[in-house]
Length: 168
Image (cartoon, rainbow, N blue to C red; front, side, top):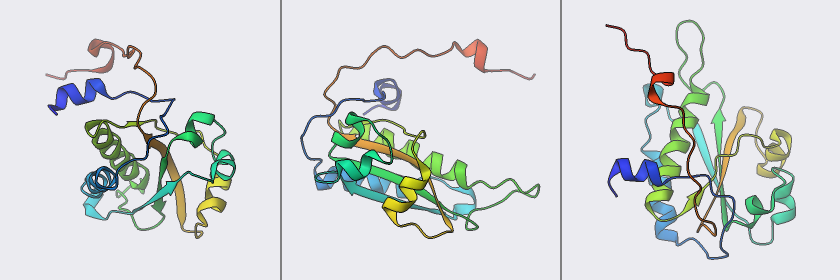
């Protein structure tokens, strides 16, 4: 798909069909995440692919929305603390790296005809318990992945002149 069309087509899906996601599509989405740029190419993240069937009640502890647990797949990204690059002022880029990875992942899913929804408002302790994370691994973001069962609404975005400053 042409890139400008792709980024206009992507939207936050909050209703999913009960159709499984094909393994080949999931592999291409995960490969896009793997290829995402990270600071100094450290790739300080781990992806967790969760098949939701039979686990809906457990997953509700992470994010208690029907549409979240009814998607056939949920993908979580965790940051490996201390493994990412830090700028000389100490700014840790792990959160930025994982955001870039998730962005690649959701755009690849859109390109495959699948829907996603960026979830940052999850319960981190419940996620930590569900994923059985070691202390040095921080859950950062989740997304359901599946075939949309809803039509997109018009995206509301600020105009460029509110977002961009040109220095000449």
